[in-house]
Amino acid sequence: MQLTNRSKVVSNKKMSFAEKLYLPAIVKGLAITMSHFFRKPATISYPEEKRYIAPVWRGKHVLKRDANGAENCTACGLCAVACPAEAITMTAAERKPGEEHLYREEKYAAVYEINMLRCIFCGLCEEACPKEAIFLTPELVPTYLNREEFIYGKDKLVEPIDKRVDITQRQKHLVEKKQ
Image 1 (cartoon, rainbow, N blue to C red):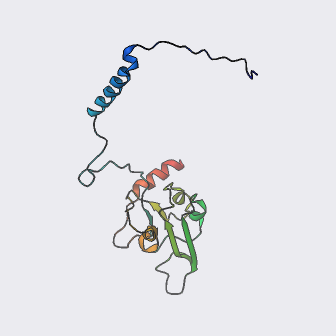
Image 2 (image 1 turned 30 degrees about the horizontal axis):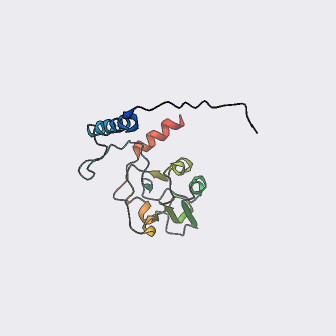
Image 3 (image 1 turned 45 degrees about the vertical axis):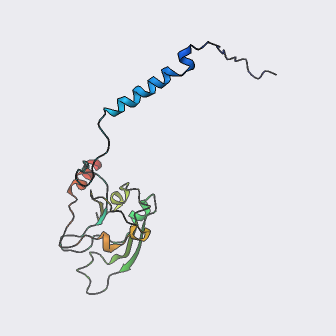
């Protein structure tokens, strides 16, 4: 029973003695291997030599403060909704009397966590934030041995008052993107 009208022509070409020994294939493989010996190696000696990182590199997250030192985040939750990996979780709380210098609005993020193992560093959280509270810095995320250390809380995310994080390169990138 024939299913199709297609036929395949098979040639029964006789192989030469060298082809039977697979010498041309071995020589071709050795030539490729030898060509790799003279190429520049792709590896670098990391601590002494560092790779170039673009200014718009999306690395470690930071929760920004305003000029007075108050947190910009108002716990609106747009960053958590925009995150495709569902890496951001937050719990909102009401500001108490006397905490006006800590938080800009009446509502603030009492708990703000990013699971860095789930994060894909897409930058959608910083694009979704209406208060410009979260940014991805050019800083690399350090490695840890325990999974719990990869869950970044406000202690690791909020920038210190005395040591501000420069995100001007990221802001230039976002302004150009919006125009």
